Length: 125
Image 1 (tube, rainbow, N blue to C red):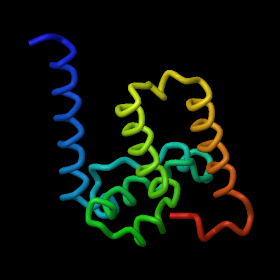
Image 2 (image 1 turned 60 degrees about the horizontal axis):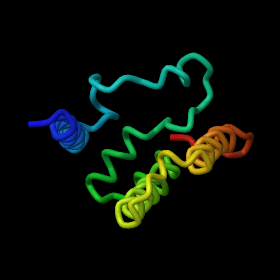
Image 3 (image 1 turned 180 degrees about the vertical axis):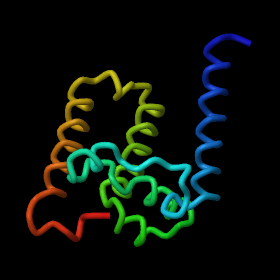
Image 4 (image 1 turned 90 degrees about the vertical axis):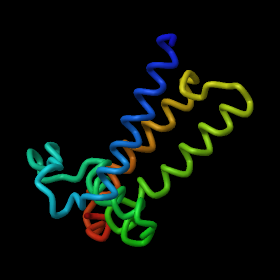
């Protein structure tokens, strides 16, 4: 078995294992999942705050509840799937295109700022 295949199998196994863990355990009621260190230190919400709970609800197909915890995650998951799918079809690696990487970074930074603006309490998990 070559190294590339071994790496892909390991990555797929870890991904499936994490999905099973998030499906079975609710991060809200389990001490296994750590709280956000950024929120703990600053009191502000990072772009990923609420993602663990949102992922749990997404795996249970509760889209509305997932959206309440982290709307960006609910929007990003299908977009990343589309980006990955288009890259596979067109044989193009979007991950190596600096414009795409910068766009994702700017979008996440913007989301982090937006959810901490006054009056945006409804975007808090």
